[in-house]
Structures are given as structure tokens and as C-alpha cells.
Image (cartoon, rainbow, N blue to C red; front, side, top):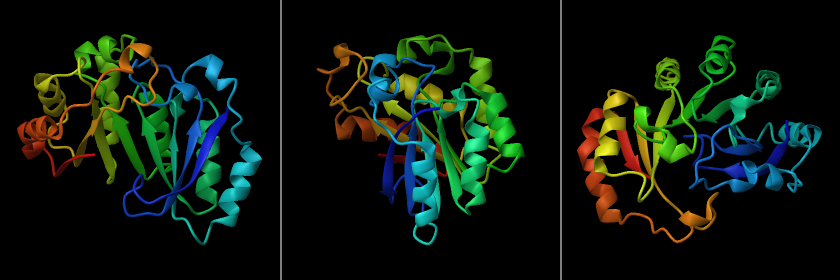
Length: 230
């Protein structure tokens, strides 16, 4: 398991907690609009300097009295067999753990929850569940995603989120996703950024206007306790 990077402080990624973010390299999806190609493309992963696990845990030990949480993201963390052991070591230092996931490994999520290793999960919903290939480059069984959605909703603290991509999503797609998770605690809409993407085809795409994002939000916000644009 390669640690591709470490953000030493974030005040926004873990709600109400000062935290750090650790980026695990590698992903099982190939979303062409992905904002972290350096954590997805094998040839770019090889070039990552990153940090060692020893360096990471030394950092955590030094910040025990400063930070409350650790955000574990990627890439896709659940592709790594070592993930449970990695998170257990974080928990033993007294930190809360937030996991960012694409939800393609429900067995891993179920195991992490059973062991009490995660306190908060953010699950990305890439598209209407029956139509994932256009958004991710890979077909995903909707039953797998629905199982993960069900598991995530067992937590007290969780969120679902969708990055809205021009040419990939329209208003109907976001409504379809929202209907799938209706009643969930939090649903966030995130606007597309073209500065760094997996596919060259997406570098020239422009994000949706704030006005259009607000219109989409107005169509779905009554389905959730919290619904916001990021």
C-alpha cells in the first residue's frame, strides 16, 4: 500500500474536527474527470514520492494533542487488503477516522463498521446506479452500490456526494441519484474542476454555473436533512 500524500491539516474535510488527510494510491475506477490522476494512473503512481507508513504514524503521534481526526481517501482506499490494519493503528492512537470511498467494496465497509474502525463515511455516487460506465469508465453492478449505500446509512455520521460533470450529468441524473438515497442525512453536490483531470478530453470542459447548480439543488434538497453545494 503506497501513501501518495499527506495533507497535514484540514478544517473542512472532517465535519467539526481538525484533521489530516492521507491519500492512498490506486483506484479500481477510471473516471475520466477524476481530479487526482496521480493517484489513479499506474505510470503516475510510480512517480509519486509520497511518504512511508513509518513517517505517517510518526506524524500522527506528534499531533495527538492537535488533531482529532484522520481522513483516509485515495484513489480508492478499499482496494487495499492492508486497509483494516492501517485504520486500526490510527484508531489506537485515539483518532476518529473518516473514510472516503466509491462504495464498490461493501464487504470491506461492513467489516470496518463491525470492528468500529470508522466514525464517518463519505460515499461518492458517480451517476444513476444503472448507468455508471459513462461516468467511471467501468461498469459497476448496481446491487453492489446499493449494498454499500445501505451499509453507510447505518452510521450516525455519513454523507453521500456527487461531482456534477457537464456532458456526463444533467438535472434528471441528479434527481435519479437523489431518489436512490432519499432520506439520507447529508447529500452534497460538488462542481467539476478541470485544472487536473484523468482524461485530456475533460481539460477544456467548463463547470456548471452557480445558477444551474442551485437549480439542481432546489430539485433534490427536500429529500435530505442537509443538502448543499460545495
